[in-house]
Image (cartoon, rainbow, N blue to C red):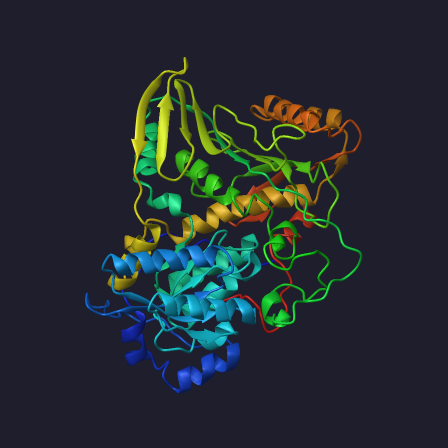
Length: 505
């Protein structure tokens, strides 16, 4: 793989799509139907495009809305009701039933949304100023890159990529076109977390010992099928697969359970966990990938068609302090419907310092405690992440974003590199895993708590029940591994023509 150039994070020239259309000729039959769907070359960088006026309506296209996309549409509707000049003007989904339901739902809110099965056709719609991308993960980077090449601002759900390389290509594309590209890491719009980060970084609790992220979230078995399953007849499976292999469906459900197989998903580390990964890195102030990463875990407690781990520990070995991530999909014990807690957190970030700790249990609050558990300080409050996106779009100014695509890329890529260590690992008994991670900061204690959790769920890992990944060393400046050819191959993927992430923005 070629070296991955690193783009510094700077304010880019201010411009919006409307003036772009006047000056850059996306009007020639919508730039030859977005360069014949899509050979890509359409928009070109502009020196400046004027922002939208305060009275102009921002036209939104929503791509993928069978789950998270619906919630994001609700945020748009709510902001409109509060006076924001915004309207959903187009919808896109390869599932005809989902698409029809979305059009009907928009109509009920007073929004006339044009339906599209193919996002490339939506990108030729001149009424669309910005797009919300809430597709499965494997589409995120390419959909966002194509959108910016077509002159659209972008809100792209987390993780912003399916692999490290394409995430960097997304960063480079935003740098080239200067459009707003907001990752769906809404904690970045939390005043509470912003203030808590600043307080810890000012040294009020002394040196950070561990920045720990937890994703203890119940994930039941997705079941096991006997052979390929029929594709739902209303789904354009070619468009649904896009950049991923168009392989037979070998699970019960096409929708949502794509999270738990590698060609389309990234496990819970890249589903829920990306939020906590982002907050944990934010506290550390790290602006590159970790130079060392190690992962262990497994898909344990049941046998199904999923391939991503439901139990996992990731050690990111930063020089300032380690970032430790824990995933648990099983309950606190067999037969329970509750999840484990650590320092009173289940889906949380815990910043453990010399003088106490800070817990971030959600996206709108944080609390600091001393070493005796006495509360020292509390923060609360969050702003609308979608509102921040629309503010930046209206001004045509990416510098107004609370979350930049570079930050979204780095946190997403930490999830990917942790998963890569797991994916190139081998089955080992618990004793061998313990010996291997004993030298990692807080490694043995973290692993022991995971073992006790598995024992309470009647999971026997005395034999080769756990996957132990190798310690992967990385050149953070190049975003390349230096000690594993197998791991390096997973930094990118083979793309299916014509759904190819371009090597050059």
